[in-house]
Amino acid sequence: KRAIARRASELVEEGDVVALDIGTTVFAMCEHLRDRDITVVTASLAVVRALAQAPRIDLVVLGGVLRPNYESLVGVLTESCLRQVRVDVAFLGTSGIRPDGAVLDSTPSEVPVKRAMIDIANRAWLLADHQKFPGLGFLEVVALGAFTGLVTDRMPTPAQLRLPPDSILEVLTP
View: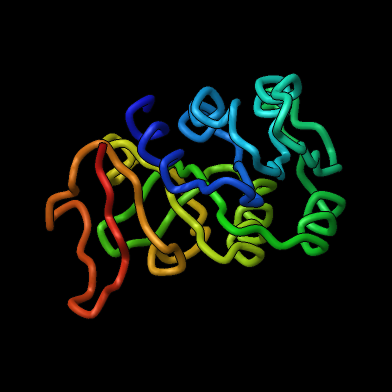
């Protein structure tokens, strides 16, 4: 997860407005972003704690209903906040990716937040280690093609992920 996070942080440019989802892989990006001159938009309290003292980061904390187990904010307030901003790049996690490219989650209240983050981003990257193929989850967030790219620790095999021949999805590894 750390290698994925390091590779993903290389996609952030100085001055970017960056949306960070909940999840351990996305959270691991924080140590690589601490000294950057960026704005971070998040509903993750773990991200807030990690970046609160970063001197060059403007931190935008989305409102919402607290989910203590995940340390995240969700609900109509979070979604409304997201509709009011635009970001250069968003980084999202997942609980699984089916071979047909369906990006999955297992928490109904997180799905609309993830969709909103993708909608407000000029570029959206999915962070997923090899165990997420196929991983878990019963809710489809979006098709993988909705993302600019995927950052993973190993290139998925054709049996794990069948991309259409005309796919322009970037797949990056550390």
